[in-house]
Image 1: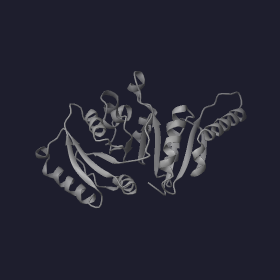
Image 2 (image 1 turned 180 degrees about the horizontal axis):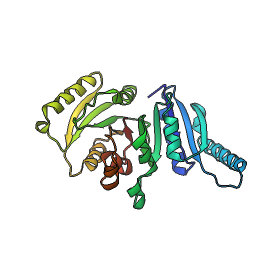
Image 3 (image 1 turned 180 degrees about the vertical axis):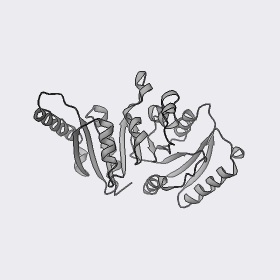
Image 4 (image 1 turned 90 degrees about the horizontal axis):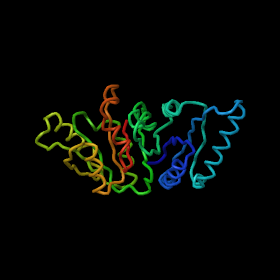
Length: 263
């Protein structure tokens, strides 16, 4: 992906530093512009002291990522709630993509969801979610999860196709737990439309069967040595997000494979 403005939220943690250092070779593959974004917290007695402390922390973060000298980047920060600041900046017309590092969520954190999942729920731009230890240095296969209930060849596919074209990789269109004969005629029509949309890109259509859809996606991607899983989440609903996990939520919290959330 090139010639994009990409937001990378950071909390200055070791995970954030390590992920960015691993990401820089990917960002160098094009005339991309990176926005390092930090939501600061008020901790000291005076606003001036907090501003100085935040800027110093940002300077230390940049120093820990020497590869930034090789790309275009800028630093932005404000005293704000992390999710609100990310959405505020990513809503701007010039923003093309958000890349977020995540370590998932366990226990009570899983009930309420990770910060990454909260951003994905409300963002209007594509988001790449990088689990701990993952990188995008080489993308050799992309698994695109589809169920054909909705038309999947709309504008949301553009970031996926741009990435596939730039990295010269195959798109593996995967349906989990549904055989071809189980598709309705409308779903088969959607599948044909997707086939025509992908005709200029290396691709194939695959099926996989597993007890649980999210687990099936992850197992298939790992078995095929895929570098990325792309999903197009449906609208989140309060009851769904609170009482039984949506596919997008489970993937964000559990997947060891990087995710591309197409919005």
